[in-house]
Length: 472
View (cartoon, one colour):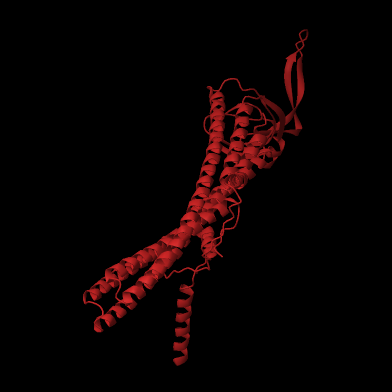
């Protein structure tokens, strides 16, 4: 019993450890690639395009079909072998194998294969674009969690400072060096710090929940992330300019490549609609046979019949002929199928003349689609350029703000240290010390926000340059 209990306890603890395993940024990304619905839908769309591409290649093969029919005829029927009318209930079978091979279709098959190939390439780039957007979303939420963790720690550190200050204030009141009102002010500051901790914890929980929902995890299960080591001295290679980043991105971003392939696909579609105006040439063949229930076979017998056919005019002597005796029998099923075999081979030429104007309409619509996809490509490039330039100048601004806040925190820290010394000798009021402490806490929180904001903007620029998104 004790052994079984030990095993169950081990399994429970092991399960708890596994369920509380911390996720790295790379693990979050890989999990999303495998399970995110949007990514899986884009992969399915790509599989459909691949099937269409394969089908476009197979369209060069001949079309072959086999047909079989059984007919029960009442009243007059036509014997397919003698074309005589048979006035009775009959039945018949018809079997045929037909083949058709297009020789020339205005290059529509070739252009259709090109279009399908471009569609596959475009959908593959769409998958990459969807993945890239997912990576950016995950990274943003991941950094937000790290930011909220730091903000929570800042709030806790602030609370410790307030607790130490309250202890010091109590000691000074006992010594008669500080008025009783200072205790109330210190307690109020401590209560404010505790509220900040609650708010910071709530913000952290919400940011974790947001990442869980993005990854489509169960919110009821424990979830936490690994905390990477992030250097406070964030390095950014400013020698790479925005035009250089755009020059690289416009040739490598999947959103641009997808738009380019879609433009090529619409150009191939335009060629297909042009080909519809061309004559088509094809070769065809048919192999068929049939059975009719009243088909008869004439058999000549070994007996003969003398049949008069007239008389001699001068003598009126009768004239007769000898006719071999014959009998009619129903032709067997297999014999009919063998005897009725027929083969046909031919060449067909079809010249389009008028089809309710549909070919012209399709051609005009294809031209408009080509024009629209060209505009889509231009719009994608313009948006990419706008995003890169905005990210570049936002990174410059974030860097300046971050560096300025570092100096501000250092200055406020010195001011707070000096204020504590003055308060300790009674040269500074409690409310003034609380104000300086609040300013320092606010500056530290802002520095944390600026740090992760700056880091995310750097990672966006790295992303546009084709660098792997990592926090290590």
